[in-house]
Amino acid sequence: MAEKEKKTDLGTLKINNEVIASITRNAALQVDGVENIKSNPITMLLDFFRKGYNNKGINLDITEGEVKVGVTIIVKFGITIPDVANVVQENISTAIEEMTGLSVTEVNVNIGDIHSEEPAE
Image (tube, rainbow, N blue to C red; front, side, top):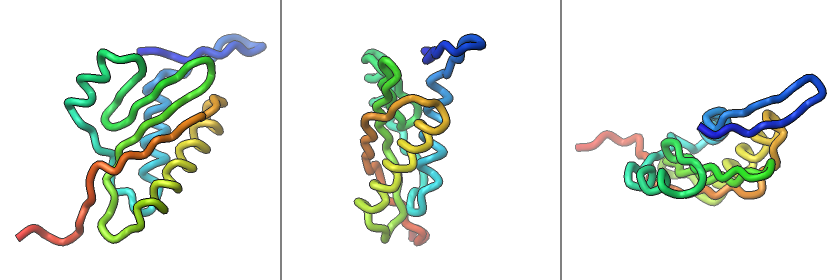
């Protein structure tokens, strides 16, 4: 697993990609209207062979202290999708920058599904 390394006066700080993915997941799930993160097994397999990182619906591309994030979310039925997507972008960007000190240059939000509260017949 790749790690981002930052030298400080007291030593070295290493941030594992799993940590950044976890921050991304938590920031997205905190947004009202987001039901869950959606993973696609085919995309995960393809991304294994590409540069970057994919973890259950979250794609990270981290270079030279900059982060590009892609996240696929499941939204609740009845919400305004563009509004929720904007808040997800802001939450993810703010959380990663505040918690890691890395600069977030891009947050791409994909809507993977809509969740309805109504029971299936």
